[in-house]
Image (cartoon, rainbow, N blue to C red; front, side, top):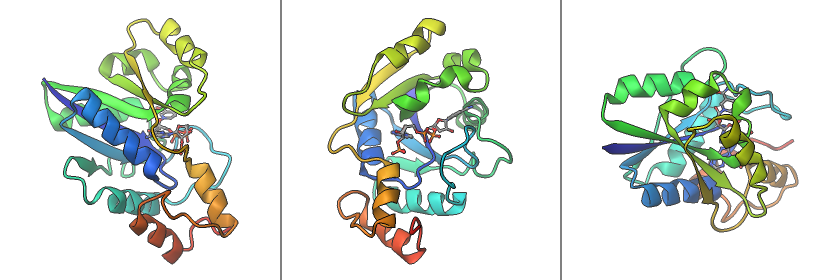
Length: 199
Ligand code: NAP
């Protein structure tokens, strides 16, 4: 059976933590490729103004350009309305055909909220989940999900390397601090050129 990873996120912006987690998931679970899917309209309201999807897409494209097994999809960006994961999984199943196991990779904090996502029972039947945790993550939050959704296949993946977050990257830009070694160089250049996150 072929295994394909789906790397879902807002990626505002993408950083080395996302990339190392995707690579670790690919190697550990034998994924033939990982498809990065920047969401169009995040289903849950954010506490900050989300950068237009086209910029977030361009940054992901630049970040993964050199990896032969990483791809990017516009499936969520080109679908009007909120980007529900259940719709994305349907669309990918149609596109990829049968005989494929899907692994949805995203932050453990996001997966801990899955009971509030659209159609969680259907969702957990359609793929495995890889929950990327940060140092000190409280595993009890994920246990609530697996208790409430028996049969959910949730695997844990500890983020390796430094604890980088998109929130911290945006804050560093606003403070005029360097992003060197936190995101790929082309992404840092893109942020500077387009004056993203300056205030
Ligand atoms: P979020 O709440 O912005 O992120 C929660 C945490 O997860 C943050 O610490 C974030 O760190 C981390 N994270 C996000 N994406 C990650 C990734 N691919 N790998 C590792 N860590 C990641 O989450 P979000 O971006 O809105 O949503 C994550 C995914 O869940 C998206 O694909 C979204 O569409 C899906 N989702 C679906 C529904 C639904 O179907 N109703 C509802 C909510 C979310 P960073 O800030 O550093 O990325």
